Amino acid sequence: MQADARQDATGAQRAVADARRDWLRWHEQRTGTVSAPYGVLSVTGTHWIADAEDGRLPGVPGEWYEAEGGDAVLLRASVADGVAVDGELLVDEVRLGEDAGRPEDSRVSYSERRLVLMRREGAWAVRVFDPASAARRAFGGIEVFPYDPEWVRPGVFRPYEEGRRSILVGNADGAERGLSLAGELRFTAPGSSGGGGAEHALQVARYEDGTLWAVLADGTSGRSSYRFRFLYVAPPGRSGGGAGGGSEGEVSVDFNRTVLPPCAFSDHFLCPFPPPGNTLAVDVAAGEREVAVS
Image (cartoon, rainbow, N blue to C red):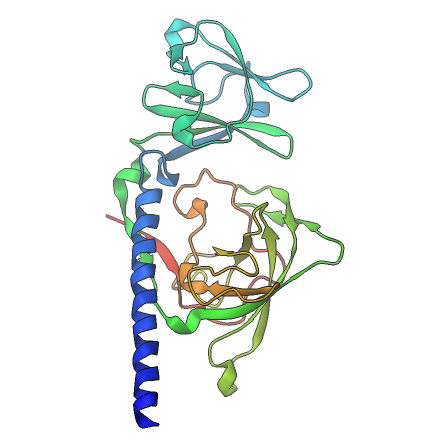
């Protein structure tokens, strides 16, 4: 019996050590992604075309107009503007749609900068990615809480009966926008089995591939971590970087992989704030904390 107990303890320790190594690799990859030449640190502006005076956007070459019908954008440029489309200098007018791929693959460029077309609730904007941005030069890494296996929690996703709910939430740029929510993610905090925790629920969005996404705050927000964070959870029935997925509706919620929102790296993102009910009455001392400056 004692030998079996020792083997079980050794196996559990080995599993935690493996999970910690996986988390360290994830953290390294995450740091590399945000600091890449066209990662979130390189964003220096998000300019709404509706606000353009005579088609001119601040610091952005060319003239930008919304096409009639609102389904595209017209860009006019001369040789002096130095704007390239699909790698060729633009000396006339071109009709453009929304960029759906990586920023570095956007159709419009200006020297090393990439000018990415985006659309939010019918409004068009140009987002500027500059590898020489001040934020990218000053980046000193991402501060994190130490890995804690207790913050890998079993959870249950419960979709709304009506399918989806859309609510207005504030955004980092000061505007209110709709946030489409698909259901609730329920879990218990560490210590629940010993009477020290409680059940919590997060309202979550759901991507086409089934991945769940929560915008949340907790007791550390604004104190030992950024004012809010994002959490991604693998679809029900699949493993998600921690414990297994299990049957339909069951998920693994790994708070060690809670991430900073893009607006923590650049002021030019439109990150939504946590919807009502997504501020947890517990300190989630796990995951990313703050952006470090060198």
